[in-house]
Length: 255
Image 1: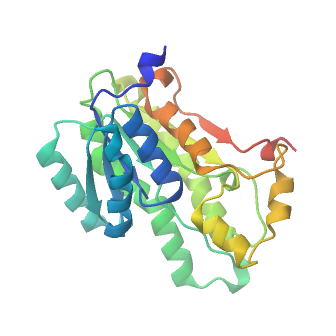
Image 2: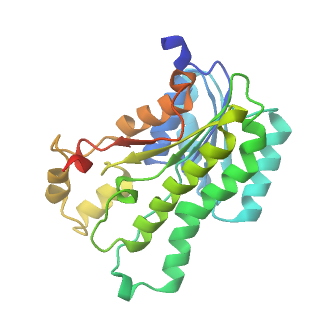
């Protein structure tokens, strides 16, 4: 039912909320009545997202935090726990990419991408699972992976490894916490017109036309299209969806 998509003032955390898919998640959640806890590294971007969703009247909070740093996640948890008794959903969206052949990949770059794309999810889930378990009707975690966690992509060894790790971690959390009422799913977007990807195309770091040809729909996803799937998984409308890798890729992984 449509009512199951509504959050009725419940707190929901979105990481990477300053732009792209995270910003679109924040706007969609606010429209459905969530109090969105906006998390990201750049306060100015988070403030812009907060201004964008103000019109929906559900309220928001801004927390400038680097979720790849354990101490900062602990600080975030303390701030959220001081204001809320529970969290209804956690959308772990923060992430980045790096293009390099493995033989040329520096150790520091490997460690940095793994920290941002995978270790941050460990930190966030570990910190907030106790609050998610207290959510009326059950809580939900949505870990944003990628189609490149399922298939390979040229010169993206660390990104593919990190996103594959997100899928495995999500499955294990689903095994451990499902019977406690906490649903855990991953989301696997295909190529999406986020500011980062637009920058890659505009600077000719990647071939935009070639990316479009990967999807059977013949185009890249809009951020809102991916966010819609994340919000569904976070909501009670997905009450029997658990442990899955939800693919939103316009048909990329079909062939």
